[in-house]
Image 1 (cartoon, rainbow, N blue to C red):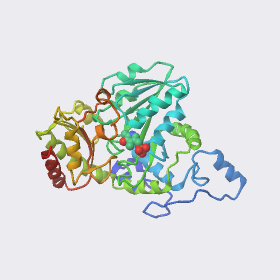
Image 2: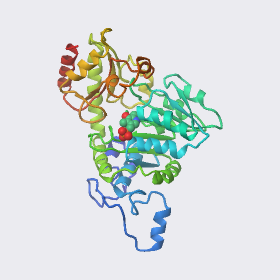
Image 3: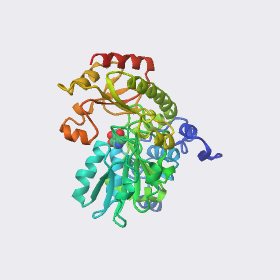
Image 4: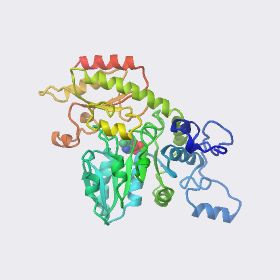
Length: 396
Ligand SMILES: *Cc1c(COP(=O)(O)O)cnc(C)c1O
């Protein structure tokens, strides 16, 4: 990035070149495996030890390959800076435990990733952090729950698990006072950019669509440099650092994010319409469907509705688990596995796997039924996927 201003490029173009600033002309990302770097003088070592995110000092503080990944994410999100972590939860727990203190109050979205929910529900109370849960789909709910002078963070996720509920990003970004944070994993930086709506920090499980090949476990936070620098002082103590190898794989994945997301979205649209018309399917949720209750909002704030969808099977009241089980055991092109955003199309049945311990009432409160199926659309040919889904549905 020397003789041109990358911020003038469209995100798809930035994704091709981002994170190559210190590559000495190499087009592929460079893997720096070294955990430590030699310095000539005490002054240099002292600068590194007391500076912020030095990339040539010691791996927990920073690493050149990880720094290249952080630079790429900052460019894609339109952020001043980014900090990578060993996983999405490494990023989320660092943001919360590094920036919220005992006695503070936080507002959290009820429809949220399971481990994030456990962080706010089980860990925060141990540290004297009060949590108010709000329904993301209710207009004004986040702002109404803020206690002036006490609320220090508002944490949201959009689109959210499992019903693909959306948060109004402009409404969230307009909240003054507390730090506003959005987990934008389902969208990726090419699907939506929360910082453009005034949100303070965007977090990703880059394990998912950003790295995009099911071969890297990595998380990231992006925002104003002042906030990322503040977070750094906690992150270096917490130690949830990103592996250089995973950062390299994520950088490789980023170059094809635009084409992957475009293709996955197109296929997701075909599948959503197919499912919506199928007699064994009761309801389909995908932000690109006009039947999605927040379709207008999706049009306003998302570049693309994305690769994630969920649906409800028609159930047999005598054996509510049967339909979901028959479906996930019946698919062949689609694979029965957790995670999302990769080349493989995956289906999960939360009621018999991730949420198996919940009672019917608790499942209901989480927006999950015995017949809920969540799918991440991959890169297989759409006709093979449609034929496979048709066969699996016919067995129910
Ligand atoms: C997977 C996921 C996470 C957690 O990320 P890990 O990389 O598994 O730690 C957080 N939020 C969302 C929305 C996710 O899908």
